[in-house]
Image (cartoon, rainbow, N blue to C red; front, side, top):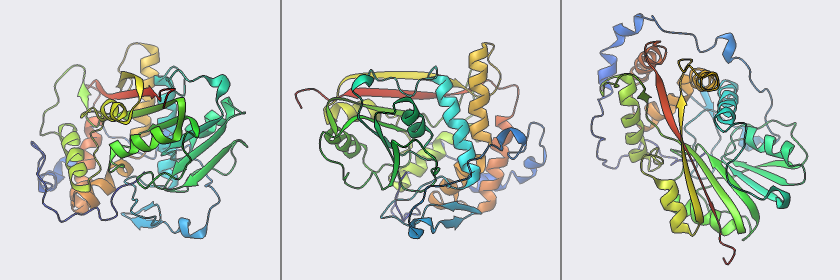
Length: 355
């Protein structure tokens, strides 16, 4: 959702241990010619895109163009590290589908009393897939999706609406307003997670729930170790360094910020569930294979989009260095000899009745 408007910070930072300099990748340019495992991001399996966005003011539609992609318009101090164009919306479709498979077709894990569900907030709603599904499933509840960019469709259930705002700013909702607040995949977006959880706590009714789903920004292999100096091995350190520079950490899972922040805010009955998410069709179990195919689909549908802003704008890499890294990363991600996976963490907690 949001990060500092001045991404290329001049303040001194401590470089992440093990992080290779960007010039390292430019020196490997010739290796990108070997496309043994490569595939085209624009192949037919990745072309299902949403075509409409929400109707908002023309000011919010003045999207910024960077590195051949579009990003949200200026809104306070907010700045997204992912694009808002149709190519990326298509990747988000696959991402939502993969999340549903990982959760056994459930939209959330928190034990919410759905018979009393009246108001739900989805923070960082993105293309609005989760909010729309919630609106269909619970037609008597009001579902609000919050994001900094108008990339949601126009045709939505009548009980679903979208608001453009930055969750880093003070929340404008009333105290004790929502029965359920949901958020997912906001790594690299929030400047102060403790404040985020305090804001959510204030706005949730006593007895209501907060659920935060996040992905660990690191790759793992079920069969062989990943060399630290490889593109896969450098992925996590690169994003950690980007978080250090922007002041918006990407290491929400690695640093256990969800459980710590929710406890500090006052939530109780906190539960933590880690999910091993395969990448690709290597699992023997059919359900896991389906999940692996979908998780690879959403990554490869827009690999450039997941990396360009962070590497060029925050880390300050030269565009040619970033493109070499992306090409080498794509090659590794398509290596059939690897059994790759990542970790997804779901944490939920309840606001005490006495609050």
